[in-house]
Image 1 (cartoon, protein in one colour):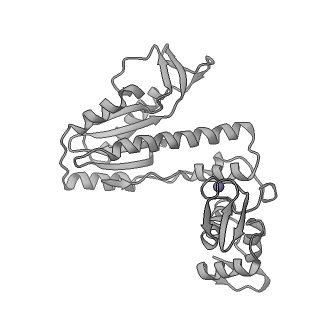
Image 2 (tube, rainbow, N blue to C red):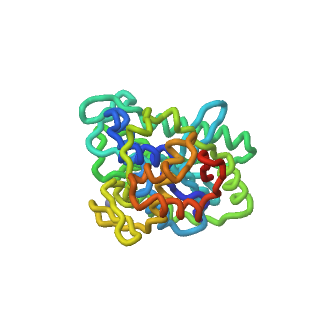
Length: 301
Ligand SMILES: [Zn+2]
């Protein structure tokens, strides 16, 4: 049973919008691609978990804080006797392992995911103790991408390599699990301890004038869209979306990027690249937001 579904992180959503509307500096662009790839890898792992039978409680995308240390968990799976922690890596290509370190194909050392995974387990254990729960934890570092290879791979039982995935999940599936009230209590506690990520310090700097205006395609993020018979049509992938839904989504982007700015007809119209008319934008705003009358400073909230 899914207690907390996977959703794109707020950070990934904002980076995706910025990437579609401005030329990101190279470092930020790489950061965005890493986030995107990580998310895709997590989704692939979710598909394996969805196939599991028996009673299990699953929570995705968690962020906790213990003793001023934050730690992120891709997936927690609570079964009768064990709390599983899955850390998913979507690494691709050849890596090598030596002297307790991970190196990519160009010989550059990358953060050791095994250390990250162990740190996570330790902090989670501390958190559970503080909350008064005592359940064995098993954590696994899952390399999800079939194109990943690790030379001199350590024979660590907590690592699941791409060729082992099928067997790993088949094996999990053979373990019976019955859940009781105490499991539900723990899952609720794990959900309520989740904190919100503060993203604004991690974003590149951007200004309204820098960003390309227009309604982005909700399928491929292209800004080459136009209004055709009350539908926003993407000229790159052919996807269409109802005008009102597309405007509402664009307002969502605007508010996320500029939380300090008020929403007005002119601003939304400008943000949407002048698509449609101010009159139809006003109709959408009136239908979905509360109008705050302040003469020429009126806005919607
Ligand atoms: Zn498209």
